Amino acid sequence: MFLSPDVALTLLRTGSIKDNDWLPSKTFRFADGSIAKSERFLIRKLIIGNQTLTNIEANIANSIEAPMLIGQNVMKRLGIITIDHKNQLLIINPKNLFAKHNYGIVIEGDSRYNVLNILISLI
Image (cartoon, rainbow, N blue to C red; front, top):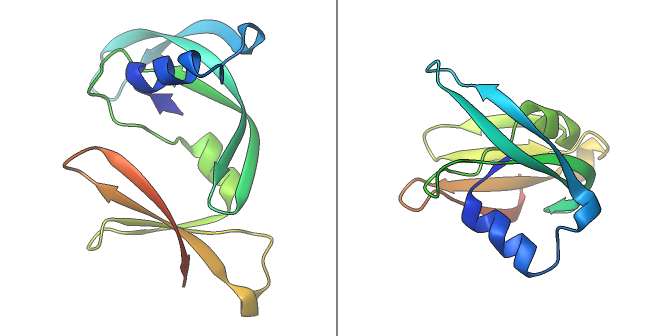
């Protein structure tokens, strides 16, 4: 998971990141070939819709304009992922729900603001 520096600062100011949550920094190579070092910390609890994930490694992006990225390491813990490109939706169906109660989570992308709005939706 990558977060912009302003989101990380907000988490620091609110006390959401504790001293013992910091992890060793890491160097990443991106798809364009660029290399960047990132400060990292542990998100002890992340709630997305009705699912709670624990111990998520978060990386702080080097740009204030960087969008929040949720990597495969987080997405695979959520369940079955479907992308609706036409409507800019990421649809998450948790693995542990019965078919007749198939409530999912819809994450709607707004490219104007690089914001993820997390919504509970009946699919």
